[in-house]
Length: 84
Image 1 (cartoon, rainbow, N blue to C red):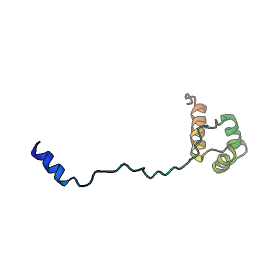
Image 2 (image 1 turned 180 degrees about the vertical axis):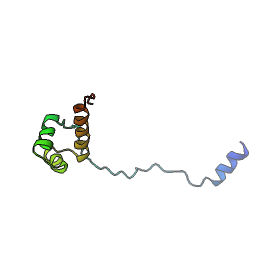
Image 3 (image 1 turned 45 degrees about the horizontal axis):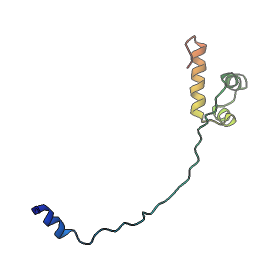
């Protein structure tokens, strides 16, 4: 027996008990479906009907930032660049 193991045994106290851990379970809903935005409909709503970004986002059920990104894509494609 080494000096370290004697010291460890002297300070160890009662043996540990196996106890069930306290478990909290939370359920979250996740949306994996990302609705595709039709660029033709987006152009119609924004430029012909003069809808606001907020109104378009509410109508299509997507965040306003997605509308802004799609509008930038439309603008790039209109300028002759490849739209992504």
